[in-house]
Every structure is written in C-alpha cells, then in structure tokens.
Length: 279
Image 1 (cartoon, rainbow, N blue to C red):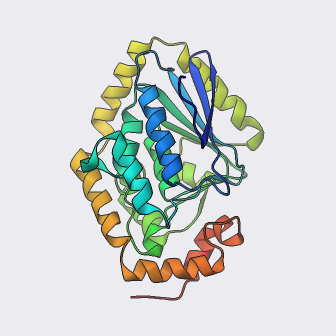
Image 2: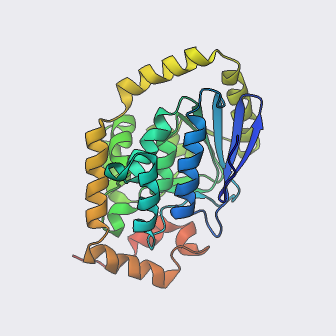
C-alpha cells in the first residue's frame, strides 16, 4: 500500500490486506470515510494489489451504523471522485467495491445498519459475531428508502418477502437471524470469528490471482444489479432525504441522542419504532 488514511487503518500480511474503520465517535459514514474509501479502492484496483481484503472495525460496538445525516452533500461530493459527477452516490461507490479485483471479506462486530449494511452487502462475503453483530436498514422509518444497494442486494439474497420485512420494518436483526435469512454468510461465536476469517482469507490468498478475478467477475455478471438501477435508487434517496417528513423524524432522533454513542444508536431499531407518527 502506498497511501495512508485518516479513518481506515491498514496492515498488509502477504497477499491479505487487513483494514479497520476508525472514525470516532461511532464510525459514521461522512466525507472523511468516503474520501478514504475512494483512495483505498483506487489502490485495490492496481494489478499488484492484495488478493484479499478483510474489512473490520476498531470500534467493537459500531462497524458502520449509518451515514452522517448532517453531511449528505459533503460525502456525496467525495463519492463523485470514484466515478465522476454523474455517479455521485454511495451506491456507485459501493458498486466499485463489488467490482474490485480483490476478494473482499467483511468481519462484523457491533452495528452495521443503513449504509453500513449496504457496505457489507457490497463485499463478497460477510461473517459476523453471534454475540454482538446487529444489522438493519433504518431508512424507511426515518423517511427515505435505502439508496446505496440494499433494495437490490437484499431482494436478491433474501427473496421478496424477507426483503420487504427487513426494509419496511426498519428493525434490528441479530447475526443468527441475518444468517438464516441470507443477509450474511455465517454467524460465528465471538471466540471463533477472528481465526475463521483469517484462515478463510489466507486460504483464498494462496490461489492464482487470474482465477480469482475471473470467477469473481463471472459471479458479479450474474448477481449485481444493473447500473441504471443503482443510479435510480441513489437518486430517489437523495430526493427524499431532503423531504420535510425526514427532517421531522431525524429531529426527533437527534433530540434523543442520534449520531453519538447513546442508547438510541445502540438500539436504533427500538428507537425508530417509538417515533411520533408523521405524514
């Protein structure tokens, strides 16, 4: 690796790059994280890049809880640097993550909701702690549909009914239920998670690069949504995130401790269910 990052730590071990999000106070996706992701993905696109990347978090309570709702224009501007102004969205940035030649493995402890869940869905594999992992898509309860991949990926992975449940209820899902639904590959005991992910990454990293890239490309061609659908989801999110209804509901959350280390963030699904109704 030639770049250093403000919000992502990196450690290269042979052909495996271990990374961890470290953006206090709770790893929100803001302009700094997006800027670092754009630079990291540029590094990973090089022919000499690592064969496998493991994404982790330095915060055991929060992998990525969601975007910073106060900085949507700023992180969107950073996302544009991955593909140009016409593709200024997290959805297109995460699509670039899915298409990177490296095999991407997410190791989940703590909360990965909203765009955090969508980041995981853009990775090639997802393994989670049974004791601590929580996934969710809170967007609809706040006032907008998911805009960075959840509509596309969850419908493909979970099927129509379960995708409706996950997205329309905006509820929290623990690792065991997420595994049963197909949201993640496996839920593992906390004590086993690190070794399992390390062994999986190291095994894959011994295989020929060309074979890995070819197999991943073929699977992507079958399973990834069309670019037009990714752009449409992003445009709808960016339209509704400016709505009065969303602003009213977000204001209720901020009054209770949104976007800081608080019970609202640790139990966001419960908090969303107790918001006052709005039109």
